[in-house]
Amino acid sequence: MNDLGKPVPSSPTRRDFLSRLLKFWSLVTVIPIGTAIIRYVTPVQRDVDVRESLRVASVQDIERNTAKIVRFNKEPVIIVHTRTGQFKAFSARCTHLGCIVQFKSEGTPHFICNCHGSQFDINGINIAGPAPRPLSPFKAKVDKSSIVVSRI
Ligand code: FES
Image (cartoon, rainbow, N blue to C red; front, side, top):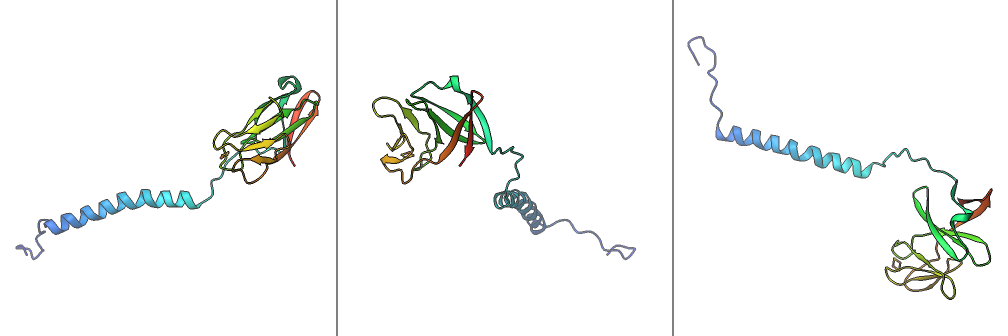
């Protein structure tokens, strides 16, 4: 107490300093971790324009017995122009672990996955390797010399 009866402020102790330092450290640590957890558990709102069908290529872009990988919304889709003139479309993601498959036109046309050796026939059916399922089919049709892909 001073002469006027008011308490004299005491100098901060080591304990006070450490306590304040711990509170500051907690805030600096908890806020980013809490933000990360909230962002992880809440769904992300994306302004992605999802289309039901898309013109992905022109017929001239894909010669017979060749294939082309295009984007359908955000998914890679492989379009094959068969020897008989049909267009077929499948998800280009291997059903094993998701690598991108390639089209092989030599011999019997088929798809291969170079990651672990899966093979799929021209209809997308898994015929060799660890892939557990056929490639996901898409619908491909020709409209005014364009190839239109849509989900089945
Ligand atoms: S990801 Fe294609 S075989 Fe493993």
